[in-house]
Length: 265
Image (cartoon, rainbow, N blue to C red):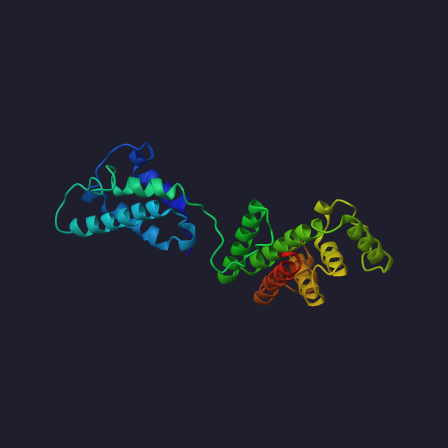
């Protein structure tokens, strides 16, 4: 079943009730029953983490839903115009719902998403939390390749952040040591933004930003993510599956745990 998000419900409302988009007054009557029932069904499928509302907005949301449900029950017996929610607004419940949903995001980290309070940049932290939530969602839906790839990208972003917090002279010395030890076979350069995941993991491990076990788990995630490259899956006889996805998601958790231990004040 597709995941329902606020913009989809708003799009449906705009299609069926264009007056709501123009913020015009209109009545709901029995001939709108099917459309109203569909709106309620979509609302009930909306993930709770996407209902990012103030207490006042939430009261409007709940009241509008209740008014539509009561209207649907009453329309089974008789036709009557549903004008507004008394004491709340002069707009009908569908218009109220649309206005409330306009303030809600289509993406938001789920309650199960790991917290990363050690990252002070609010925008970066929010984006990473959304990516982790999407990774977990893909895992729950059995989308093994998507979960594996997303997890690898999150690990890359986390290690990039971690290395940027470190003394860059020490980062450079770690690279030189790894090149001398032939652990890195190519100099990734001084611009961390263009490094690959292998370089991030090896240097973060060398600087003890992450632990040995975390580095091993992250390397597995890297190898599994590489399975998406054209021809590699067929050549190696491997493919992304539940095991690769679980392993990659576990690596994300290990990296977060190590970074939290390293950088939390």
